[in-house]
Length: 515
Ligand code: SIN
Image (cartoon, rainbow, N blue to C red; front, side, top):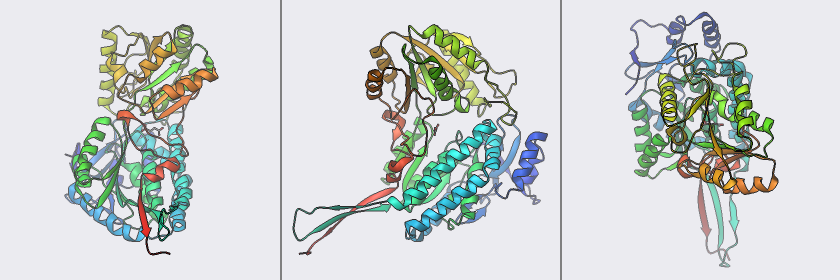
């Protein structure tokens, strides 16, 4: 079901123009600039054509900082998705035959166009997602880097020759594209989570149907427009959005879709995995985390504060790799807690377009309510609020950067992803105790620890049951390293040379009668 659905008016007024008139002055300037940029799109992209939802339905996209309507975009479902799949299937026949160098050129051009429009894409991200403009522009560079990296990797998809045990045979392995890929992406990184999937998919020779989040479709549509301008052929990149269950079901049911790649909640990831079983598709899942951030007594406190702030408060706490539990050793606990409070109270909260703001709004009211519920549960079980702990005076979906102490692993806040600007402190005594608390979760995406002891560094890095470990560093994401989790945090890796394998099949060829 499409939420916040509106039926389009009968009189034709370009939808995007019609709605930006309602915005506040600052946002209106931004929207007007975006409107003239040529990539402010509100229709879906199917087979190289921008199309409305077949039933004419639209869905509102709101600015999370104000609630204002930014645009009404096409609200699509089963029929549009099936057409997008058919287009991707047809396009696969030729795209997979392009040489690696040709695919590489398209990706490189796409990268160049995104970088050339970095500021405006950043503004679009701030407008629909809320993150501060500087951070949003940072996301554009981060997102673009996956395209640049994939353009380079496209040329390095090597096979293998296997020494044959029989004299008259020659054995080798070909790597070939999986086929049509369904890419389901989240709202917290509206650009980077698309390019991290679509870059390697296209480099490998796959075609894609993207379903962006209903909260942030405009960035996805802008990226698709730039892909088109970069010369990516019609049907290679398709975008449908709106009715998430219908789109998801159509992608899962289709025998033409050979792979689902998803970033989002663990609950939805499990459903997709189960749904993919019907047609035995490949799946890559980047799901929820519950990152421990361990501060040992021997840590450099300045490094630990900087790293913890970076990890915890990036995107207002709304990343899968945000520190979710901060475990602090007894000997450094008080000093660390007070230094963290000093740093956190200086974080400026506000509209992402305002100068100096480093903490934007949460994505919506439900996100704020979740933070409130987890905090209430923790406080009712003995946690103490050291800083913040309530909605911000700015109102709406702004929440105060918060620190709470006296956490234990039985509280909901230690078991669930907070996805908000709340740092939770837990005191521990020994290294073994810290590792045991850190690993006591079904999640296994990212973990961090801070220590100046080189032996401990190896020991702890090896003992943590996580796919990503930051040592004396809170910001670890990069296009050149494998991103992904273990346990219920997902399957597969994105980025790096390993990310390409997710979009490739191996074919073993045995040639006989060769003597
Ligand atoms: C995520 O939160 O899903 C991605 C974070 C990142 O790429 O660093």
